[in-house]
Image 1 (cartoon, helix red, strand yellow):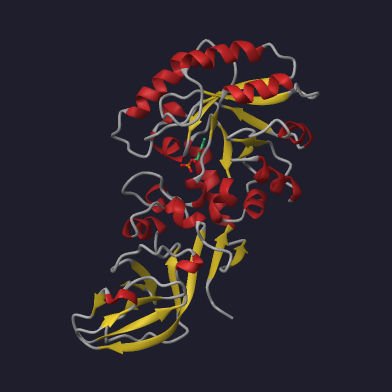
Image 2 (tube, rainbow, N blue to C red; image 1 turned 30 degrees about the vertical axis):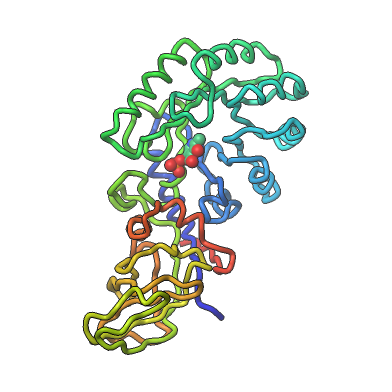
Length: 358
Ligand SMILES: Cc1ncc(COP(=O)(O)O)c(C=O)c1O
């Protein structure tokens, strides 16, 4: 069997959640598990997030998967509903939703639910993605706060640049959110992972960490271990061939890597068909037998090559780590001109997943 697999370390997720608790001790935690828990398996991850106060997903399909998997925690839909027909399920499955646009307000008012719901009203504090302008935010708060079918009306916003601790925009967004909400009742939330780490003033009643639950640093130029986070995914495979390459010879499609001296390359069973980034450049780090070796040549669909030098003791069948505790995914992302989010979310279904209690 092809040895390419992703091992999910559930104890690392538990550890990261406990660490978040110590970083935001006054806040409840809404653990973000959208996009299949950032590629880690939504139900398995939710089962190990026993100590989270709620779970957040992007859409109702993800919430259904959680409820079908036996998860009975509060669940928040971060993009709310897309059509009015979802309201019945919101009630049946006891879901909470974000309301970020006028269409969603209209759907709710035209189809008032029988059971009282928890709603998160979203302010666009100038990320200019989802949420109401300041004026609409106040109007909708007034409009909705007196409705009997709303149990709790809560307040939220989202940061554009919290990952960059030198960017003044987070402080500006925070000031705007505080200004608009200080006289309003209702719990508040603003902080994603970066803000949990770097902007304690933004923690409010609830924090909403995603990436850091999975052991990665959301801050620029840092890795999870810099914050005592533990990586939750190991992507691993094995060496399937070792071959000599003479000085001047090329490796792989497009012949875009050439040996500067006589060497050996190891061919490893992983490629972009598994979600390994096609854009990983020559030199991207790969872990093999306790050291880092560089990618040599283009990533193909099922394989990559690494330069292991001519004095090695590597063998066919040796284990290789593409990212995990031995090699931070943040470093691989940098070499592939991307971010750890896309790498974690992008592991394909061809890869065998194994959930480990360790
Ligand atoms: C509204 C909202 N809150 C929280 C998060 C979690 O962000 P992060 O994974 O950076 O912690 C996201 C992620 O995209 C989001 O869209």
